[in-house]
Length: 272
Image 1 (cartoon, helix red, strand yellow):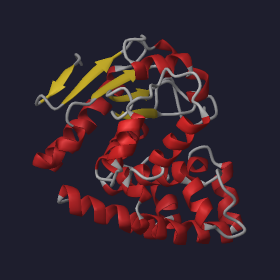
Image 2: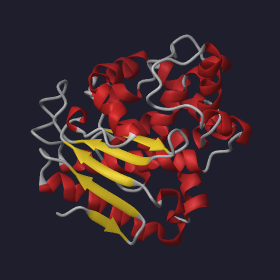
Image 3: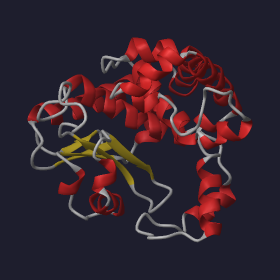
Image 4: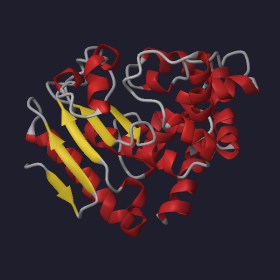
């Protein structure tokens, strides 16, 4: 499938090593989503979907591509990466199609179609999460001064960035945090289920390993779990829109309250 665009709204770039099946999966998933949301697609307009075999193969054409290329070892097991455009003003979603080293029983030379489709909607979910979240305009002005290429931030800059990241998304809202807290607490209290999540290659990504959820969750830990909240939001977004990577039922069973909240946001903002 040639590179191109859909209705002047989203764009596609394909790189060597990716199959037509993978390219079709990404473009068709995006096209299906745009058709469903219709006029409510403003949050994703202008984004470019890039499909690459592995991040190390990317050209250094944009700040996001350069960042992933230079730090590819840190993203070996990451299906997709998106930039919500505040830093470096780049609207990019990059999907890595090569098999993951930790999961050869699941992945082949390129990711299975159902996985790349879910990953595509997962990244769209991140953009949705960011777009509709309430933000501090003064913080945005400060964060815009930073760049992905910055080698090291000062302590003040890092504190400012952390404050911004923890207060910009729908997944940072009190409503979402409370729903997430109920589910994370229940998961932490069920050690058998929690340990199974941590062992599994896909579920491990949603096991909340950045804080200890087995001894209760403090208000500070809720803040510290910003990445976990963001990741489960994006995955539940993909599930709510009909995708299934083979773990949908298990993850929905662990996050019932969080899932309902994501569904409510989809109804509210996308009228779906």
